[in-house]
Length: 400
Length: 118
Image 1 (tube, each protein chain N blue to C red):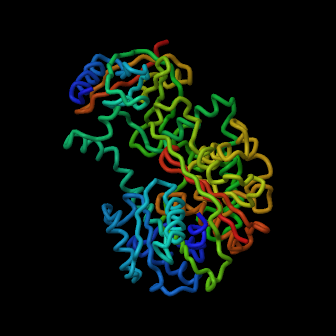
Image 2 (cartoon, rainbow over the protein chains, first blue to last red; image 1 turned 180 degrees about the horizontal axis):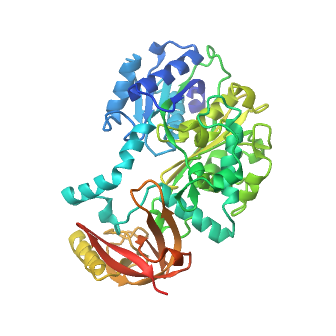
Image 3 (cartoon, helix red, strand yellow; image 1 turned 135 degrees about the horizontal axis):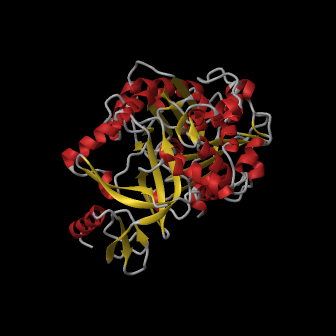
């Protein structure tokens, strides 16, 4: 056993780049390239040194929508000019993909598969938004032409996936816990306060609880200001065995956990029972929550944040709303959460909030969060979700 | 259970206006998703039955993202749940409402929707 310890390489995040805009007219791989160049620059590394690449993208966010998997890896590599890859991977667990990919990059470096692994995730959220808006008609067409769709799996329904599923959860939450919309809606208000400290947030300006509760209904009880809006961009993270040249303090992996629910929403005994507590428990291992200085919480919908707060253990079941109303979210508060404003205000980069919440944790740990910097942020916990609580991945990262 | 046979029985129940419920003969677990194997015990000894009445476990009214307003329900049928649309009076809609199933066919899509039973 001792031999293994001696040969294990000490890996760390040595650079990252987060590039996004509300809407871009360049190809999606160009967004990957822009974030990768930022990451390499922060690490003070030559691109020739990169020998591993992990890519993730939500299908439909790349210009040619079937360009996912191995071909996307090749395209990204050739776009940037990375030609000597010893390790490559395509990860897709939905919104949690970038966190899972980052963990795999750490393991690839630690085990000696590669020395410097780039993780990159993103795409054009706008592209998939456009596809989704015509989805209802195209789904009927598929059913007629091919006879086999997911409709065959159960009773055909008209729905707005995944928004309407999260709305079903939000409605049931209020019933079970005898609460109203205010605790959930307050998440949007608190995150907007953070966004107002972030000049790069796309949605800024004063926002009151009344504004959120009076915004147009999307899917009862979820309103427009409780739902993220897809934008275009990518996050790149460089994991290396050599941290000496980097311009930031090396960011270490302290814990990781993932958990899934393999049954569809309708068959879950309690739709408020999420896999979050399981992934968090595994990621924390023996660490206590009082050691966590910063929380990144996946926020495509306010109801996700509410249930994650409870799953992480920041509040008891049904008490998430009370936690939100308290001293939380702001960089100066007891529990700094999503200090960039989260994907509710930054926008959902590449149709996934995973990159948005992970990037802000990295800015905090690197001490680069400017006027939203959390004082002495040394350990960050980031929780991410895929599907409708189908997958939860939690990562704990730290600096010395 | 043979897929073809299961599929036929499932749609026969659906066309009669009832929600098809699959039950495992080995462990007793019941579910509404069309599977040839029980997700709890992996037995392939399943039967299909129908049920008509249930209670709204949760609902949502979709006002954006579709070309029209649609109501989506999770209905509890004695502990077995199904996701389906609601075509009843919107004023009656609430968690706990007793609902009854009905067969609908639009173009080539056959489905079950719910209406109030009270």
